[in-house]
Length: 319
Ligand code: BDR
Ligand code: CA
Image (cartoon, rainbow, N blue to C red; front, side, top):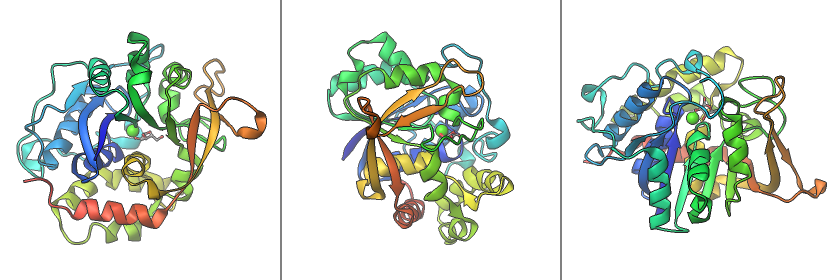
């Protein structure tokens, strides 16, 4: 199994990413660390607890509260896109497997540092929200990057197109200074799943596909519908062919490498000064001769993702 920490701003697809970490037999999920991002901070904590309960693991204190705002900027809400992030699910009665558990007393940044230091070179950290917790761990403990096996990031764009501003993707736009610190921190292995082109070109679930993987009435299928129906509506309203699932696709790619059809080595740098292009990611390919600091996923196997997600949602959750 793959030891994992998932750093998340739990709303919609983040919750499905957590289900992969909690239920996929390939995963050994050691912590869920919450970072300021999509929706109100405590709502994100509640959404993570509800997801853990849905997976039948509410007796473990997996969820850690982390940084409650970006390093240098005001919080950017994405509630217009995500609503409450969990489709109105509220408590134990909405969790597939019963009781909603409690949050750990340990701060997310301390948990990241401790868990990676306890197993140096073994833990993969998957960051599917703004990079504030990861950057704060870098700033707090100089040895943190060297203890991480692999840092896997959902964020940025590899063709100049953003989803929050014309040129910036949400996770990097929300805390550009944090993203910059992380890409300059010297992690041994950084893997990035960018918003464009892969999420939009290879990752969209059409309404037909969406309905086909939620048609047998398995409990986690209902959880998925509650969490993600709003994504489908919002994506269709802006003219996409279906719903986008960048966060769950990122965790799935860590657990099933065959999901990635192609990766390339790039120099990734983040814009932190320009008001016009704040949070823009420059992903420079080798021809420019700059030292690479990341592998970037260039193509994902759509059918394989659909199969993995379908299988995940058909599982009953843990007893
Ligand atoms: C990212 O921003 C959030 O809306 C999603 O959860 C994902 O992590 C996509 O830009
Ligand atoms: Ca996210």
